[in-house]
Image (cartoon, rainbow, N blue to C red; front, side, top):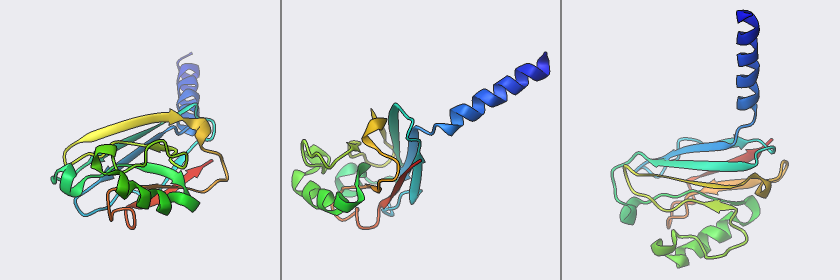
Length: 146
């Protein structure tokens, strides 16, 4: 009986980890994310992005956010975001190219956002990036949907 319960627990844990629906990222004062690629499951009903700024500098000077956009348009979104300003988290308002974004945070802060998993399709190319002015050129990575 005990072996059967342990086996059931292992199977449940395996199926829970198979559906990766959370993106955890850390950004620092050196303008780096801790990952260059993240993977999520195409079966996720919702996907959550958790961002932690592990640096010390304030949002006004070294703020970070996470924006997800199709790879083909992420540079244009980032450039348009500079015009939107900090008060709009450097993200253009109501921009259909933006799949999801967190707010801009400073050192020691954390933020998260949840969005419908249906916004990401397996086989499509997506990029996550920080839209703070000048950051997107190096603070970026691939979002892989399996």
